[in-house]
Structures are given as structure tokens and as C-alpha cells.
Length: 174
Image (cartoon, rainbow, N blue to C red; front, side, top):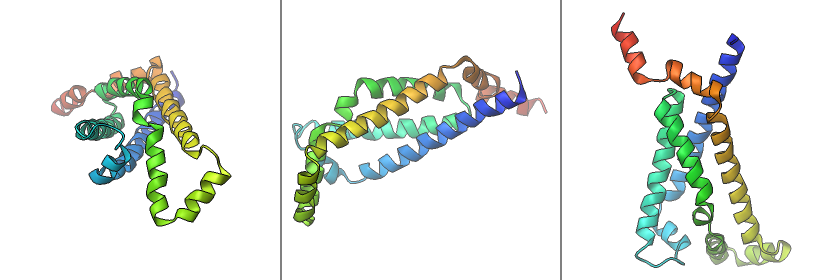
């Protein structure tokens, strides 16, 4: 194994960890307003919305923790991210229902109805197009995470220097 290979894989771990942290922080910003979240998910029974919000919030904090753990190359973060990516792909329809985009346009229409009418005339079925774009982005990112973090050479980077116990043992042996 060459030093350049080690640097390349470690660099990939850091880049994907930082991307995950950025995405998590941005999505957490969208979750800070519960009333708007409830508005977007008003198609659900009222008793379900707080539960869905809690799961969404927990999922975001979990991905943020995974991203931070990747920067430390913790094995548990690698495995957790693979599981989160599989869950993301399996629940993609639940994560981005088209009805949310319809409500987003309805919300914007309250402020600028002419713009929304024009946009809906210029791009028919724009809500479906935006939903599809979100599906592609989420599935692609989840696929990249699964593919990259299941590579044997990437796994080695976590086993060799990623365990907190190994770092603690090295610190104590000084």
C-alpha cells in the first residue's frame, strides 16, 4: 500500500464527512420551524405530524453525529452511516412526498401569486419534477456513501486509526 493511496482514501473520508455535516446542518435549519413543517405535512393526520417531526429531527442529528464521527474515523460512524443510507433509500417516498412541494408553492403563492401561476404554466408538473430531483439527490448521495464506505481499503482506515480506544491506549502509553 502506497502513502498516496492512504492519503486518497482518508481524503475521501474527510470530504464525505464534511459534505454530510453541511447537509445535516442545512436540513436542520429547515426543521427549526415546527409550524412550517406541520404546514408542509398537513396531508397527514394531525396526531402523526409530531411523531414524523421527531423522527426527522432525530434522523438529522444522527447524520450530523455520523459526519462528525467520520472525521475521527470511528468505525461505529461508518457502520451507522451505511445503515442510515439504506434507510434513506428504503424510505425515499416517505421522506419527500410530492404533496410537500404542492404546499410549498401554495405558501409562495400567498406572497407572489403571479410568480407561481407563471411558473406552473411555464413548467407543467413542477412539483413532480422537484420531487424527482430530491429523490435523485438523496438516492445518489446514499449510494455514494454505501459504495465508498463498504470498500475494503476504506474500512482499513477506520480499523487502523479510527477507534477511540486505540487512541486512548496510545495516549496512556506515552
